Amino acid sequence: MKKIGFVLALLLLTVPLITACQPETVVETVVVTEEVMVEGEEKVITKVVEATPEPEPQENWEDWETIKIGVPTLLTGAGAPMGTDIQAGITMAVEDANEAGGLLGKKIEMVVTDIKEGGADECRTAANLMERSGAVAVFPGALYGPACIHAFGPYDWPFFHASAIQETVDVVKENMPQYKNIFMTSASETAYSPNNFKIFTEELPYEWPNKKVALLGGDITYDMLIQSSFEEIAKENGWEVVLDDTYPYGTTDFSAQLSKIRAEDPALIYGVITSTDSSVAFMNQFLENPTDSIVYIQWSPASPEFIGLLEDKANGILWSTLYAYLDTEENKEFIEEFNSRYGRDPGAAWPFVMHDHLGIWMEAVKSCESPVAYDCINTYIENLSDHPYEGRVGTYGMDKEGHFSPTGDEWIPIHFIQIQGQKNVDLFLGTKKAEDTEFQLPPWIEE
Image 1 (tube, one colour):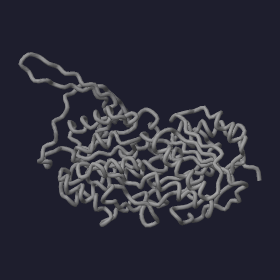
Image 2 (cartoon, rainbow, N blue to C red; image 1 turned 30 degrees about the vertical axis):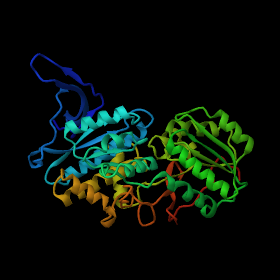
Image 3 (spheres, helix red, strand yellow; image 1 turned 120 degrees about the horizontal axis):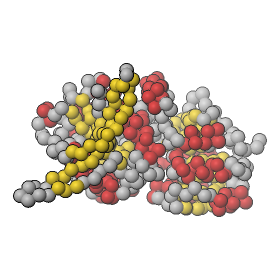
Image 4 (cartoon, helix red, strand yellow; image 1 turned 60 degrees about the vertical axis):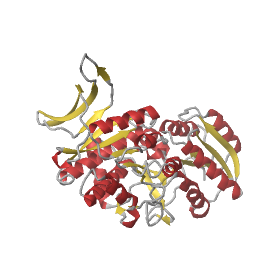
């Protein structure tokens, strides 16, 4: 029997068992997944077990059997499509590291838990689980807000995320030096609109039939900030905003918005539609009676489900991301390996980002010669711009005050992408036009 090397705590149920003259004992119900050999074939099985939490890690880490890392991420709820790729990516990264000899001579083990929508209660529960399990670094991938920052900031372990949310940067700045362990390995969403407007109006080989734009997005801070910043830039440059709509996040009925869009026939629809369910529903309803509009959708096309659900209806959509994999031989091999294992292509970002997160942390641990030398490790990452990390999505540095990675041609480039032939195709990387690719007129626009 071969264990896969992680404990998946999808169900966390604490039950105090108190008897006379005995201290309180906490029992956890956890779901454990294992890979086993059945008649010569590997199969994944699950089983429910009850166990007392493991003790907090001891400082003599040399005696540990494994080095544990935590992965509290979005396994259910609206973020589940991202969580699918986050978990797959960090799993493959850990397996690659272990096959190469592990870290400081020890195997890396994962402790995974579901933070659902990333609310305060879920984040506190996850932080408590990570502490009791003995995790020494935390890799959630994505967050919807600052709740997990507050839950994990009081601890010493390094905490990596790539949420691209200015709110999380502000929270870290406001709580320094206590939150010195929190690192966002991307720029914030404030970088999107200036970059996108410049490409739309100066770089894209397209003659706009009018200067009307329809704006719509969810009622979460990330969506609203990008939407409002694009509105400001558009108006400053003489564009008419014919729709400026904010809807409850997760909405799947866009009849009211599309009625206005069809009446105005804007040249550009700028949809900050980061929910996969919402963006797929919008495109299906839009294509029932499309206008001659370029359609841009924020972020959700990065989900591995987006193109799979829309199929050829996705062709022509424009989108952008602060991080996506670079076109390298190493990444091509990774995609083949991912496809072989999971039966699908990876999303554009998360499996690669998670590989980079683990790599940055491992370099820091090696430099500090200990997985629990937290001050040394956090200082190494804080000063990452002095010794940049060449990753799968670009070159990582770190802003010392806000603990976020810079974007730019020399760092992690913004990818401006069009879906062509049901594939994500880079049109621009930062300010540079991508080689051997061309913008294609969306199929719903009549020439």
